[in-house]
Amino acid sequence: MSDFSEKRVQQQIRNFERAMDGYEGNEPFARYLTSFFKLNKQMGSKDRKWTSRLCYNYFRLGKGATQLSQQKRLIIAEYLCETESPFVALFEPDWNLSLSLEEKIAFLKKLELLELDTIFPFKNYLSSAIDQVDFIQNQFLQPDLFIRIRKGKEKFVKAIFEAEQIGYKFITEQTVALANGTSLQRFKDLDGVIEVQDLSSQRTLEFMDALPKENWWDACAASGGKALLFLDKHPTINLLVSDVRMSILRNLDERFERAGIKAYRKKIVDLTKDTTPILGAELFDGIILDAPCTGSGTWGRSPENMSYFNAKKIDEFATLQKEIAKNVSLHLKVGKPLVYITCSVFEKENEEVIAYIQKELGYSLHSYKVLKGYYEKADSMFVARLIKL
Ligand SMILES: C[S@@+](CC[C@H](N)C(=O)[O-])C[C@H]1O[C@@H](n2cnc3c(N)ncnc32)[C@H](O)[C@@H]1O
Image (cartoon, rainbow, N blue to C red; front, side, top):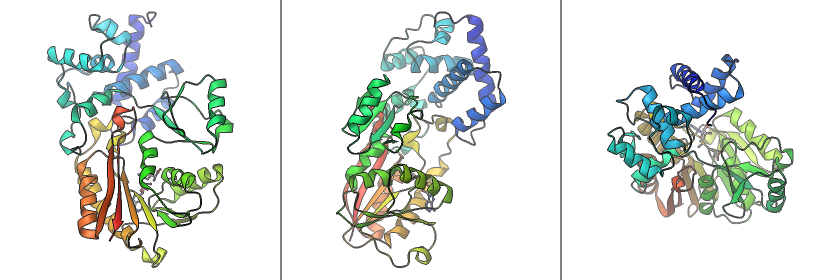
């Protein structure tokens, strides 16, 4: 990085500023950046990488140090997110990049440049189980890429990683952490053998115990992440998958085909409406409700939300989650489990919704967990298993 001249630093800052100027927060930043690069064909792959790094690091600062200029905030963000930075080296050559994150934060506080508290503007909404300081600090770390290996294929996948010299770390027998940005698409042999799925998402499986040949419903299946996880462990289950979006269920079909799964039922169901025209009086032995949510537990991957998310949405999602829970509950047999999942860290979408399910819909709480992914470079999630009374 020492060959990074002042001129190049200034050029990368200009690229960063141009990218930030055009972003209004009304779409995921990743999507915006793809269009931005398409419009700016003069930028080579290195320029694109730098712009992406600078913007994402900048977003990780959330609402911290807003009293400072954009450039100064960028330098602070680089300092907190990186151990080597030509930007810090040029503008703040005395700042020690090899300090730990805690030490860097303490250093910036001493200089009266940053208060940790100001970074995450929605901290008062966090579930009480979330350790605020640790959660906020970990927003500066980019999460890892996690994959799940299909049962029985562990050795096969390991051999490919070894042969291709891909760095990997087994977390469990079937769960592997890879560095973020590892490209796996080029390995066609891995199609259907591995699934990209966050660590916390994989851990929700513990709450999905089922008996052989039961009838289950994955009511918000999207492209089938949880459904594949569930069927890998419980292959004899008769599964109905549904979602309100037809297009996402097409992705599910493709993923199921790659994984060799043929026996499943699929329906488009809007869970805010009467479900009887589509499901009749059908009753299931178990329901997975991976509800639409703010996604606040996944903002380590989309840190722009810390600056652009509107807190009003938390109440909107909580209302939707309760309505959906009420409607799916009509299709569950008494004595059977409802598995409620979100990738949110907000109390209103988690603890308050399961309190509603118990009190208003007549359930007992079997077990629940706040999955603190921020300690493992993973997403944070919430999962509960409730039994219908
Ligand atoms: C958190 S995602 C599900 C992720 C999925 N289970 C997985 O593991 O990949 C929530 C899903 O709920 C769906 N959804 C949102 N509103 C809905 C509604 N009114 N009825 C049914 N599904 C809805 C969304 O389309 C989205 O795919």
